[in-house]
Image 1 (cartoon, rainbow, N blue to C red):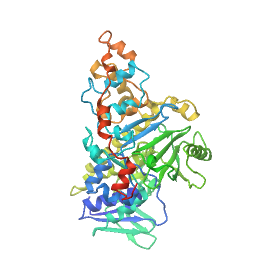
Image 2 (image 1 turned 90 degrees about the horizontal axis):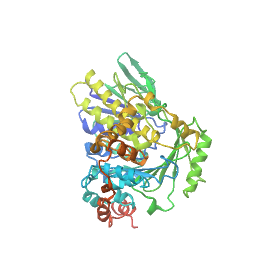
Image 3 (image 1 turned 45 degrees about the horizontal axis):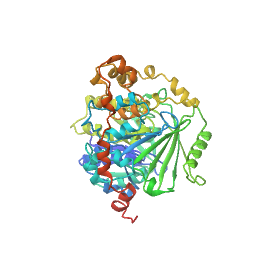
Image 4 (image 1 turned 60 degrees about the vertical axis):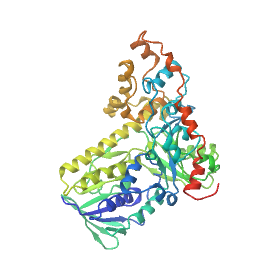
Length: 515
């Protein structure tokens, strides 16, 4: 089919990121966005990962273009606390590429050290191999310092921002001749065997298009309610299905404006902490199979109180999450982007990731003169692969936990991942074991796993445990050479010693405030 007229139904981050993408990459196509004035957006997707830079670069957007308008801060890492076990001290999954020069056998240097010295903190792994930790550990941020650190670039920097303000900023970005913005409710969706034929709006207008982009959130009005594409739930491997979200004020802003998203596991889920410039976005992701919404809210409030926040006048948003993905997200002339396509859960900031990743896939198809079944099938396969891999990655955070202090965590220990998602253990968990029983130089987890290295180490999963070393390398060496300190992190710390805190950098360079 020839696609010259694209209609986006729904606003929010997904709708406006879709509009921005199509308007600026396809100036010769007609782009329409229909946004209801009555339907609030979920509005808690305030944290991104490094891949957002690919999308921003594609559209020619610089950080300084939107940050001040969107209450933004920079993000260099994700921190996890109490996921492995209560009181584990936490660990980081920093962005960037691990620096392996000067090591003997790559990341195995640390794994062997951990096997010989079990008291080595799990958090040390990220510090040994990721230069950005020199900034993260001291709440610092400086673009010039990042350029000096090895294996890091500004392209590895992600953002925290107010999602509602980002959508508003994108409206202005979309003000081009080929863009039409309509604020009205869709009151009727007509369809036939080829998909959607037209949309009847509350203002009496009928809107037609060649391709309809469903950005209606969990309601999925087009793909689910109209096309009725089957939805595959992932509730069997991902335990959480609800969230309480709120906003809190800083009590010590210079120290609380951190260059990372913090995730703290509680009794029935986990709490996110996202530092924006003017306030902190926070929420409790939990499972209502093991607690009630009321008890979860109280657990969340107790957590906030323990951190010193005033909870007396907070407004809490109750969110029910549809966890899983449609079998196909582009069917006939309807393509879903955002929550209408699927959702994993907020862990690892995957919500906005799937938006810009799926948009990157669809623009490749739309760049063709005509779109046929091959392009649509290829799009669906690529998106499904991205979604499945991220689902497995998120599930890893639960699979490797040893917590057993509540029914929630005890059920997690009993969950069978290999049967409910066959590729999970073979592609992730068993890969650790496979490399562990191979030759000495093959112990390390493959670099293709990216963050899997940090999550595995942080969760106490060591492919070079002492039993494996003795069993498969009897008498080969004493491994004492691995106890020699790695001086890389000391040199990175030296490079970062004069860098400003993130609070100071933002105040001076983005918000033009005096500190």
